[in-house]
Image (cartoon, rainbow, N blue to C red; front, top):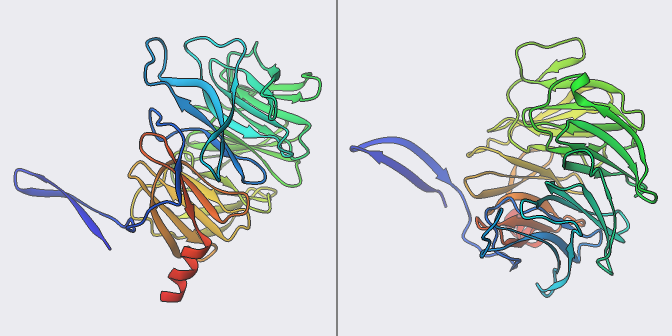
Length: 353
């Protein structure tokens, strides 16, 4: 049911927005309350656990984020174990977390931090990467779990061998363009391309040589190794296609574009007819659904490639699908994690239609 929100100033209606959030409850709410909805979290490869940053409400120094990562059991909603950085200080907090492809190690980076690697079972810190490169703002792991690629606040890309901690190669992004703030790194399949995501642009790089290929930008001036984007990209609206050969990105209110990584050309355009602004976008593991959310607190699941609404639910932040695609992870405004069943409810909706 549509619920209009009307803002009135001196008797005049100046804005009208429809929030189509269905009346429903998540299957489970787990985790600590956080400072906001941007809690970094990741499913384990088997989907049975979630790694997430916590919150420290009694903080007197530094940010109110808990400098401990917690591993949560999805079934029970309880903490299994915790991970700490051995050289922590008051001004550090985690901004990205991930599991190794085999689930045997967990990784994190963030404000004032290098990339840190722990043993999943023992919570022992194995090693760190990039401590001499300011702090690591984001990273990606190769599908074989042997290497990590980091982006640092020094605007440098670096390849690390995980087993030895050895720096294999590094390049300066500034040699090709000046990024605003690198927010994510994605791997194509086969793993011969890196996608480096900025706030309003993205670039393609060859791997493992780290040779710059091309950059997509919405800026008016487009150079020889750049291609124009039709509109400024929505915040955090990059997602790798399920086959690893395309990347999806969105305008603030749609449409969503699917770009072929090999040719850097738009493969198709998907009109989602989004009611509210899109700030986050993700694609299901099977490539049959796309999920979006924003600061308005509405998360929507659409079918691919039709762009048909399958489910609406409340939620903010770094929304994501479980590894089997049957569960959606969204966040409350204060950072708690909400788990939603997708398959059964979507099937019921289809039957009604």
